[in-house]
Length: 328
Image (tube, rainbow, N blue to C red; front, side, top):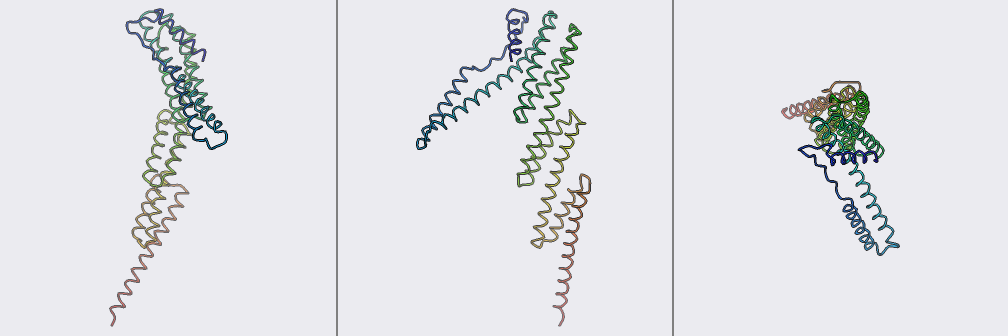
């Protein structure tokens, strides 16, 4: 964090002294007031403390749970503030680096080239630190998606810096090594986002009762995987995850139509049951066949044959009864 602060202070002093002078000033985004934020958090914690204390007057030592709840609120507020500031700094470094590269085209290449390289190094360190925190805290999938996007922005900025003619060979080699590390981070977080998003959505789909809700949520999981496959089409883990989600969709459809067929057969609607079983066979064999699907298809086909036999028996019994009723 100190290296990031030094990079920001150096950039600010350079801009104020005219090193990055330009007719179009690049405005620095204002950060929310820390004091105001902490005052609001303290007020919230205090309100919660006294509210719980008043509600727990009948309990022994009511100030203990009230104090614990207020402390938790303060800890969460401080942690959230730190995370927001760190992400804001990372984005701010990327924006300032883009500004420095635009200024490099106006004439002062040497001094601005050194500043740009320093900013790139500070940005990469910030990305690595934030990546480690996201991995350690078992963050939500969207946190990994955000790190992936920051890596994408970083790679775009370094590609532009490498095209500058005034960059030295040493700085060029350093930037290429930094790009390789950023690409590894980018790959890791995109794969993690796709995997965790697909798992979460698949679990949610399994808990739904209606078929269309299951299919809709499972297709959202498949979209996450397909988006990652556009970047890494040969990734084995992604292809396996996509296959698992498609199998879930197929099994859900087959189970739905088999259940409808069983209900119709139980009620004596044999023709309707046969139609339901045929729909189940269609979804079962549409995307290919393997040993498990062939075994399931064989069981469904036996059910269809049994239902046809029952229909034939009903017709025979009905014909026999009709013939007997016509005899004198």
